[in-house]
Length: 134
Image 1 (cartoon, rainbow, N blue to C red):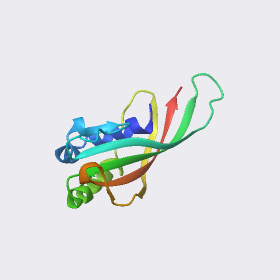
Image 2 (cartoon, one colour):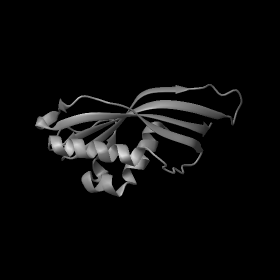
Image 3 (cartoon, rainbow, N blue to C red):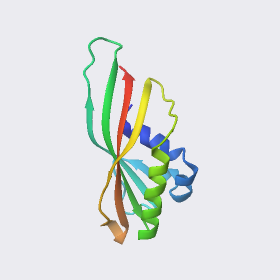
């Protein structure tokens, strides 16, 4: 389990995000240059975990996860960034096997950029912490 899995779970369970970006356009890893817009790319930027001392121990992990919005227009880009932030922060209950004590906080927003095909791009980063049984 990873922070990208947790963010993906939050985004795909948000009706407002799915209304703006269909679930099949929310991807991890990379987006095809010709993917229909609007789309979201979820990537891990950094990950730090404490080493377990014994088998079956809980490992506390802190990850920085980046969500890149690729949109048809600057207005869409800005609106989707707001939806992504709303879907991921606050009192969100996440139930995934072997994961406890999940916390998601904003960790900065990147610059407005021109993406493939003159699309509008911007990233929203999150600091995701959780405990996982290893």
